[in-house]
Amino acid sequence: MGPCPAPVLVLTLLLLLGAVVNAQPRGRILGGYEAKPHLRPYMASLQLDGQHVCGGFLIAEQWVLSAAHCTEGTNGKLFQVLLGAHSLTEPEPHKRLYRVRAQIPHPGSNIHNNRDDLLLLQLEEKAELNAHVKVLPFQREDRDVEADTVCEAAGWGTVTHSGRRPDKLQQVERPVISRDLCNHRTRHDHTITEKMMCTDSRKKDTCKGDSGGPLVCNGVAEGVVTAGSRVCGNYKKPAIYTRIAPYAAWIDGVMASAARAEAGDGAAR
Image (cartoon, rainbow, N blue to C red; front, side, top):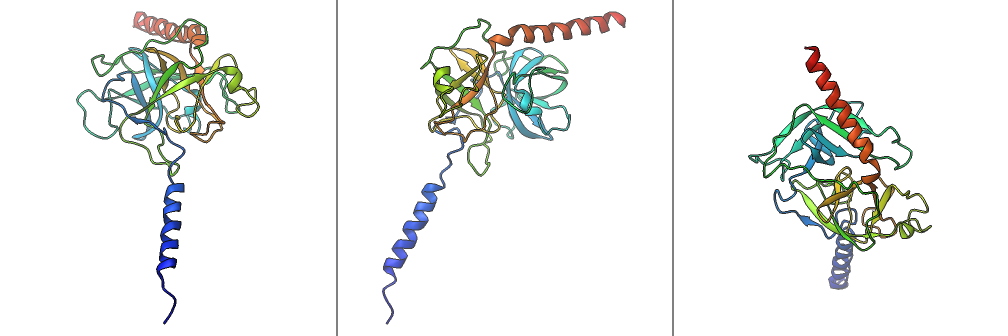
């Protein structure tokens, strides 16, 4: 009679259990949760061929702000912008997909670093504002958010390392950390400029697909989720955001230039 298989069975079960535990996703909005439907009516989903690519948010009736690096790999195709959504797929009465007339990345943005990582998208028409679609004010005063201020991020980005994304909007609250701490050689090693800010990312973080969404502090958009060579949820690689206030004049200038061009076209007709 052979040896009792019980020890082998127990060992196998323990190994399988360990594998499951170790497989729990680190690269997600860890500690995040589903947002209450339509309480963030400014949120936008930037889409290509019906698929969510990046986040964004409505800053004026015809304008969405996002991240310039979201255009990488799009081969020059224009996004479509979904507004009024909680679920990306389920029917919702105020959800609407808008065509984009123009995509304007900040001229200082590039694929080599996170600098000037902003993108303005002009919709083909003004968004229909209602309880589910609203403009989010952004910070215009160029001053840092104090460390330990708890801010909010939201998005439809990746929730597991396997790449699974949620159908419904997720959110997470994170405290701001000082630029000095974020720039420590064990963190982002002096790559965080005065036009960037960081939040603590220990087990709670934004991830791929959340880029372009807003970091909201006290009801105002302070930053835009940007790219970072980080493992989501790794406290040694804090989340990076492009601060909006230093770019307020650029944003206003782009929108004003477009308005003048449209006025000129109207007069020409």
